[in-house]
Length: 265
Image (tube, rainbow, N blue to C red; front, side, top):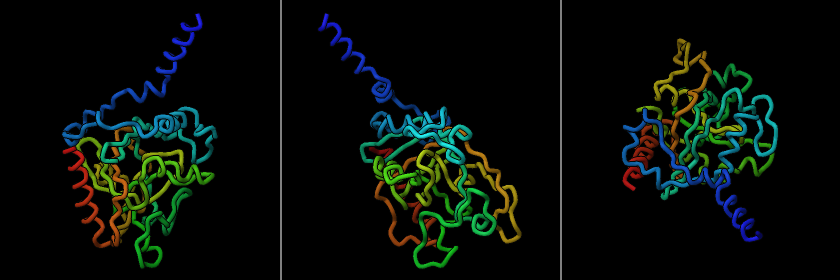
């Protein structure tokens, strides 16, 4: 009887939800298949399934790492929908999620911000005064990673688990669009999937509803792409000495080169 009980206990351990999740294969959205040819998702492994599941729990219960999220930290109104969080053999980090709008660094955020808008961005251009030193959401396609929490472990968790940091390069895929990006801002530690207005526009999802006579966006339609956004990020890929006048060209060239190499692995 003891042997039977012990065997049953081992069987239960072998099929806990987290272990089952790690054994499941990931399939990207069919709408993106044409631009993902050559990428071997079966070679990627979960970064940390328990950590990814925290975003699911926040979507459903507004609880992350045992803490109830309130106010702007609540997830239920704009669910993360983190379907996968994977690491490829070359250390490329991948996740599928929603994409919410970040206008930090934009003209509007620096002159007439809303309650959640900030002029400063996490990444800043060297040797420029404010506000020019911040990355303009309207001009530069960038993504946001979780960095803001109630303690140091929350602030660092995504970076520690993925190796992704400020300035690292990446590629965002939505349907058949492929957009080179870099990590230029940070957001709440319990939210994943956020990007600039320039990224939305490049993905064919422009959120600017009113332009000023000076060419700045004055009003935005602030709603997310609800799901199916694919983000590839390359650890330790920050370009040193990046400047506003060369950033778009340099980020595009290096990020796309890394994306092509991922297809060949």
